[in-house]
Length: 498
Image (cartoon, rainbow, N blue to C red; front, side, top):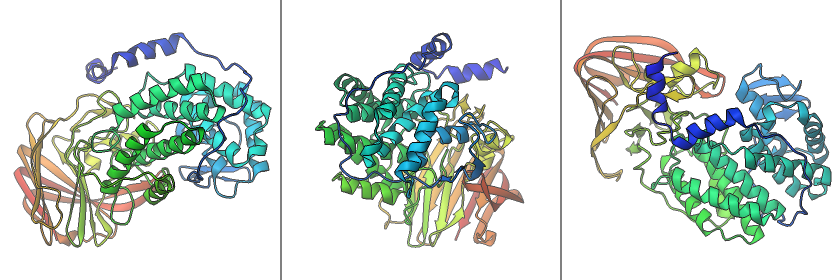
């Protein structure tokens, strides 16, 4: 064990995380069968967003990996795959018949005593929301047998709230408890859940509307859940003014961060095929009469720069979820660039959450469009979801976010290495310019999409240029070829993409 690295990691934790890490090892709440109260809350005001199709016959497909059902504890495809099986998102996929869904619910309840994975708090939270959506869609399926199990799982979740992790895990717990309380009409639980929910939204949603873990994918996942809370809560005549305020903020950020084609940039832990699409979220919000307008990006650390043919998302921010950076990469000053709507400079993306060599690479500085010194990462990413020492960003200058005034310039410095790294982004009428400074030898990496023409990159100040074949991901467990330019320099480097 590398104790200095461990100390650089745990020093950022909050005391409540440490206390609950110890508590979770000593106290393990058990599932206790309870009798559910009579359902009073009713259903949703409007149809929630349907889920991706994952179940066909007796075979599940998650993360682009397919396998027949052989048990709820099946982990050969990784723990995230096993979690997805226990989430029951697929219960609300398009075309799911009532009798088919009930078959799987009853199977789950019957096999619950031997289910280790499904009684972790995160699967309980997501599964309870999905069961409630299914029961609201097919009220005749909400038998006492099934409701008793659902209520018992909610009460177990109440005892297993994820204070040892915080961040999106605790927020998901709050969403599930709130929706469960609204569904059952449980006033005591609703009061507790609403207090937790509002407290976490205040903590986790930045002033510019972004979720503080800085992943566009998780932002969409959590926004969807927040809209679900508004959807079912107001059906129960719960005042949703505060929830609508946060939904408007999150929608405003989403409006600003997405590409012109409506897709999300794949920054930090983000992939396609997991979260609802932005257009689905905007439609859902409109059906709930939630209003919003685009919010300029600031606290999230991202900025958008564009001209008539080019569009870039640049990262000039520090880690904001300091005590839970599990979905963060060592990608300070990373960027993605599109030309005529097509990817040109890409992020390596994520293909796995398994704690393996690929996961470590995908979180590394080398896997991003960043400056690397001595082959090291700007922030110490390790262990799949851990970060030790973190780079801190000092923003020096940025042009107002008015796209039609050129040149647009953003310059910043970070302290991730022994000497400062400086980067300047410039968007002109007809090009995108990146300038790097480091007092010594360094390498600036540029990942080009498979269709990108490297001759469009004009380089000044390089001491050596290497072109390597690599691969990147836009979905889990799927790869595309890319070329990586490793541009060596000493002191100053400038390259222009026309």
